[in-house]
Image 1 (tube, rainbow, N blue to C red):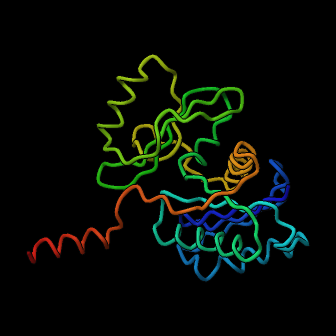
Image 2: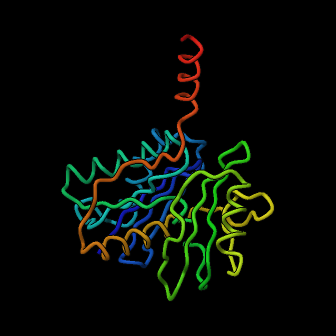
Length: 220
């Protein structure tokens, strides 16, 4: 099964082709969030380089966030367009799960991404024999709330931290597009080879929406 995966959730624009869980090739570009201009050429370059066409792709995988609101929309809409026009199944994987896949040894994994103002995107997984089980669904937590969860519910567990959401626990925060593909493949197989309707995962409101709501509130 050939898989095309796309990650535009951060400043890094990444695309990869996998054969099941084996990486064939990937391209990454740190373009400062200009994904609308560079994503399609990057996909074309990757496909041409490997002499593969979109019609050879069996599964499409997109990072659905959390991350850059604009970047996520671009990646998800591109995957949905390919899926609809060529009848290719697609699945979405959230950024926190992609991060968790950086850890390969059995443990409880605390995956976090900084979302400013002493808040973080937060999720917990348990890796057992190659399977990542969700313990705490992705959400927005204050640093104190995240610490309380860890100290009260998981204080007897050995926890591996990944990401940059908790300052004193900052570790590798690289969103590996290869891991996105592997997680997408496992989800697709576990779903009985059935795709899904993917949507961006917005765990908090965009800043522009917050400002508009505040403005409307002040005008009442």
